Image (tube, rainbow, N blue to C red; front, side):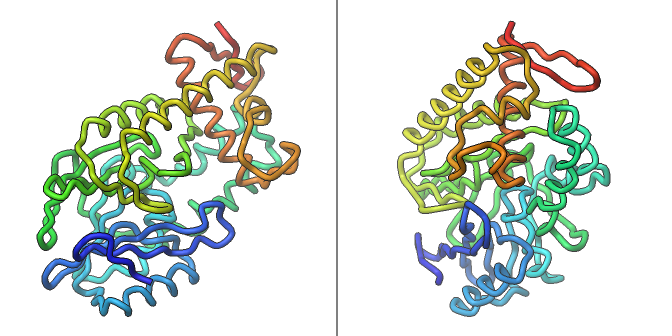
Length: 322
């Protein structure tokens, strides 16, 4: 069902079966003879059926529809390959496009996961079950690439493109200064914390994410339209809560390392997670994967802050306190 959240801006929830997130918000902006869709859902039948029902409700002609995708994750990007028409544009960002075009992307992730302690017997199984691989684009697409400061005009709305790396390298939001609307994707969510993860030897996504939060703190925003759950209007309070969450996470990681050097996988197994399981061994494999990636992101951040050091032992990366 389409809900009009602002004049000519509609929100529909696209289900994510079997996923803890439950659903993604897809937005449709009506402007004269064209529409702009913000994020789409996974490339799976359940998502497509829900989307088709919503489009029918608003009598949307996909031949007159363009797409803005906030970031690379399959729940936001995947379904666009089933919706896009020859007359459509897909607006996307440069850094995430590089990942799509990297034929060694998943191989590199597997190597990093092994190096950071993920059991060899589980790595390929985790990747094969990863929604980012199972429900992503089914074919190559042509993107219209955007950068910080570019604008998208649709109807009475003029959206500013705002780069907010952290959740992914190229995460991008949209800001409308007249109405003070902010399409936040997965950068700021109200009652859940965006996953900040790393399976690489390069980069510091948590540092990027915190900088991006500070950046958006300076914006005058009356309404946040997020990628998941309900819209909200207290972005500065939520930013403060998210920063505090990661501060506490960092201290939790430091506390775990007080018992000695450990891999990111070992650290993740000792962190507290909001999952209904008594033991780490009972976590579903995809949840172990996301937890391990988040632990590594925090370890990388702490290393950059000079609180943690990384050493290689037998081809494995181990972290300890400085």
